[in-house]
Image: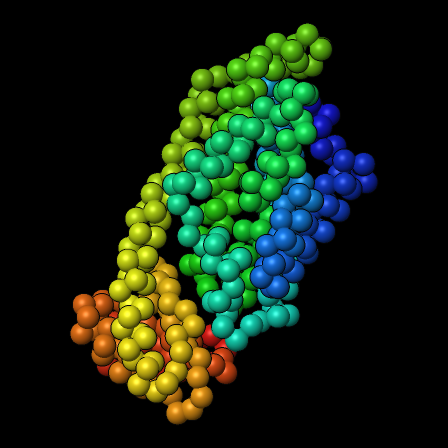
Length: 328
């Protein structure tokens, strides 16, 4: 197990070259899948991605109380995460879509982490650690790789940074942090329950003293991640209600100019509406006024029109400004 999870120090060692090679390829595949809005391609990146190895390695190092190995695994996770974000930024800069990825389903599904994502990550991390200590169920690892989302959120983070969607980039990074915390926590518990420490001592490995404070720190990290996820869960519920209320108002507004509503979403209290049609366009200020009249005056409005133009209509105002290519 140690040979599987602990990556060797030398950059030219087999485990190190395998880790970095697969990580770069997974980052490119994930970024391409996000740009192409292809679920199948993103799933392929999940299977290839090797980030779960140093994350579970961190859990094993914690159980064995090997501090240097803990630091090395953590540095590998951080370095790998930064590499994926950088690749995502590169592809995002090259593509730079007019709507700033507003209509991309791969992006939208990773910028609203909730408590249910933490629960799913805890269950998935448990299965991953369980598969390592039980050789008879190791064939479940590909399914674990698909279920746990590690590389795609980082690729999304990099792309959103290039289009200046900093809050959403932070949310996708939070999803990655949630999965990491869940894997470390569940991995630590599974390794402890299966007596990995005793097995390591019998094998002649150096094992340090495991302290209760280590376990408490792991639990605190999970709780720390759970706090913003709770707020996110409440925010998602509010956004869904806001989008449902805004849709009929937007459809009535678009009908005056024979336009069509392509999408209605709400993100962090901002109503985001996509509209298709031929000139002349209905006045964005009229939609702003209609939303105000229906009790949505406290929600900002972002209106995406065909051709890449975006109108920004802040709350509590009757004026709208034009943003080009989805940027201020």
